[in-house]
Image (tube, rainbow, N blue to C red):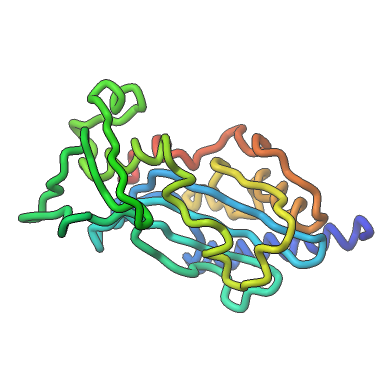
Length: 230
């Protein structure tokens, strides 16, 4: 592929992402209704076809559920953007809620995680050392963030199960990122302005592998960067 061809493909990829961003159909920063616990971006390409999947682990206050939200973009995706939302953890014996309160013990918590019965134990010190203020954080959000710290891959779906097209996961994986820099809409930034997204687009356009630490500089996807928005 010539340099001009790859530059054109890079801009096409960024344009698809920018359109979704402007249409609010993009995995943006956390907010009051959907505080996040973890994120992942996975890119696949053979230098021709490409696929980019975003997985966001959050607590959905409107539904009172621990959720995974999946957005996907790609060369063969008819409807880029939001693909699906699903519950990640459910109560093994009924419900987590009673009288509009989260009932379980967040220091000794048992749930069905993707169908597996799991128990998670955390001390107050572990919460504090992870930057979680139990005095000012909803208990269910604090718990999810602790679990995601240690078990993000177990909480998120496999890419094969969330890819919009059955043939797309067979594309070679170019990268898997757990942090990057989101654009700031208040500053008028777009996806295409972000250095990391330009690196992702180049990887997808050329089929060149992107190192896992390529986007750590100035990364802001960790929930601790958005506490004011919550």
